[in-house]
Image 1 (spheres, helix red, strand yellow):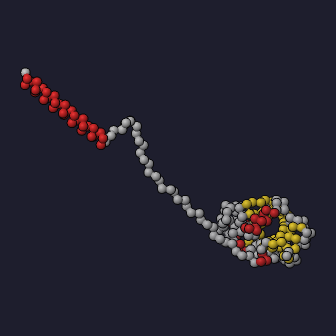
Image 2 (tube, one colour; image 1 turned 60 degrees about the horizontal axis):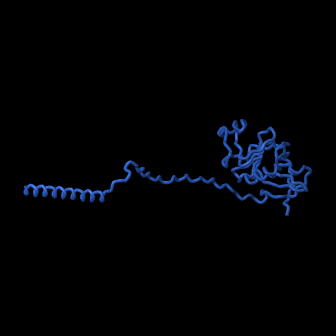
Image 3 (tube, helix red, strand yellow; image 1 turned 120 degrees about the vertical axis):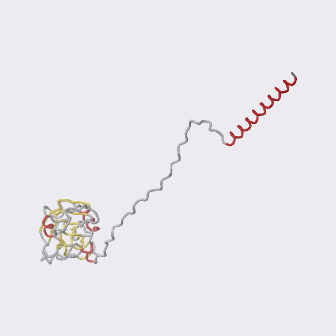
Length: 229
């Protein structure tokens, strides 16, 4: 009986030792790789940061500014006339546009006029004003120049420039230009052109209904303006 008790004691000791070793091993493993406290909560995957999108560089318009001769620059001049203040007088022979100010003075602008065979004269009124106007060449112009576009949206590249003032029921306009070097020349199909800066200034000074007198090419008496000092 004594031997049986010793054997049972040894077996119990061995079993306790094995249990202790297993417990230590499990504790070491848990320390090395701890389990999450809430295994059912998922961590969202990290999203890659996209590089910023680079905007396209803005295309700069070609600088077409030119230095006009002194006589063609906008200036207040002495200009005796019986016409009421606010009247526009086109001095066709000298490529000037006068805006009558009153008290014997006028604002004078250099202009481009119709080429040979395309000048005209008469009295009209401004019936419409437009900023950065679209251009639709009239049929008469298309017949002469079939390569022209049938329509062109307004903008810096448009031949009518920054502003346009339409004259009566005619096809003619007072307008700006993207070719300021043509001021003082005879180049158009009858329209009267100013630099974009000057036409914007004139546009701000006149309204629909303004009287416009276009003098004939043969009238050399119109150049009465002398600069006001």
